[in-house]
Amino acid sequence: MTPVLELDDVSVTFRMGGPLRRTSIRAIRGVSLRVDPGETLGLVGESGSGKTTTSAVALGLRAPTSGTVRFDGSPFPRRRRALAGRMQAVLQHPQWSLDPRMRIGASVAEPLAVLGGGDTAPQVAESLAEVGLDPSFAQRYPHQLSGGQRQRASIARALITRPPFLVFDEAVSALDVSVQAQILNLIRDLQEAHGFAALFISHDLGAVRYVADRIAVMRRGEIVETADAAVFYERPAHEYSQRLLEAL
Amino acid sequence: MTVLLHVEALVVEYGSGDGTVRALDGAELVVEEGATVGVVGESGSGKSTLGAAVGGLLPAAARTVAGDVRVGGVSVAAMTPLQRRAMRRDQLGYVFQEPIGALDPTMRIGRQLGHVLRGQGRAAVLDWLERVALRDPARVAAAYPHQLSGGMAQRVAIAMAMASEPALLIADEPTAALDSEVREEVLDLVFTLAAGAGTAILWLSHDLPAVAKRCSRVAVMYGGRVVESGPAAEVLVAPRHPYTAALRRSVPSAAGRGERLVPVPGQPPVLTGAAVGCAFAPRCPAVLEPCTVDRPPLVGDLDRDVLCHLPAPVGAAR
Image 1 (cartoon, rainbow over the protein chains, first blue to last red):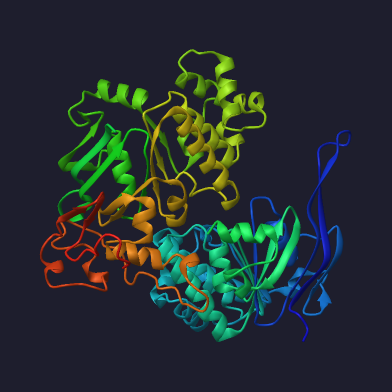
Image 2: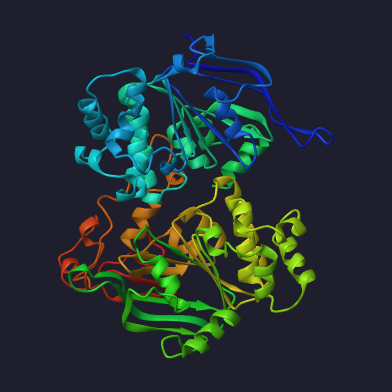
């Protein structure tokens, strides 16, 4: 089976400062991970462990300094347009993915426009229904929605092109506890229905464990442990993973 | 312990006529000196209104219909505006959700902090910036708020709130606008500084596990009332109120392997007047007949107060 996404020994180095006092920071070092079709890989780690850099590499938004990234078995195409509609991201703050001056319906339909679709209204209605929003929400603006509803709308937008791969970057971190539970359940149900592969990034091991099939633990730019989610209910091998588990 | 803050049957409404919204519907809360109290509840449960009422900071559209807030035994409503300002200056510290919005955009950080430190000089300013773990105090002091990141600005706001070593620090979702990466650091800072100065903390949050980890006491708010309060460890492990139990069940780390999370069904209420019965009744799994008619009484038992017609006994799991 070809993995949807494969990172092989990927490192990213940031260079900072002017020419005379140039320093470099290795954000991630030798990261290898694999996401199979229909699988959710959880990525958990503390502040500055390199989670966000890894997600940028996975989405093809940042070229690795060394190592290779393969999407659907081949390296990223030079033209990003070729990837349109095949990978999507859901971010921490839904207001980051919704234009405040666009109605929800238009925001949700936008990815289809890139693919050159015709009448998008039925697809928008279907996508909104899937995430549990009434079709009438298409006419509203983002500020007229609650935080949970906005996150649902941004998930609808991410799903409308039926992408085989999604990145959830701290997608539930900014939500109320009870809303968080609804969104986590929604992600699980949608994945069951559509079978997309996902990279679910969070600092909260509890949330990651709940949605992921396998979990990779990052620390200081390296992956220290990758194991089945089941292991993280009992006794993970690495000492740092154990500490994360105890902190729950 | 002496009581520092006493909120007594406080009722606060916004707007008037048909547009009236009741944000607090008889909230009761006691904070003792040096205590760390977490107030948890969903958006719209009245947390922020409660926090603002403590310092007499309610917006003009708000009306206090009934009840009282006493800080150090003195009623906030009875104070003259001058006395209220003095109380805020000497006894209270506030940290809000939006750090950059809490700072004056036209004034350099050093100068703003200098105002709070009341002429203690530049050395004290730099000392405080260093105490909130800002790496380059001199550079930060010379910066304007828009030149700082959210995390840095929140550190400055914490320094300003703590500079007078207040008796009570009110932190209204201090980390909600921050990246999850900076959250823990900022919370560590707040709690370390407060412990050092003997400051009591009133932390308004929706993050149940975080509150359980850091606070000694917790008060759970729903529909403008504190529905349950007590020692944090006990309340969150063995809740007496069905709402607390429902909240706890929706925390992902509480779900065992293969279990499905149970979100609290329905939506939180928007009250337009006094709730007729229990505000949680429409969403409650154990609703009884009196719940929709009578306001639940306060049932106190071994330091565990709960507002419910059918409270679980102390120690029993709900």
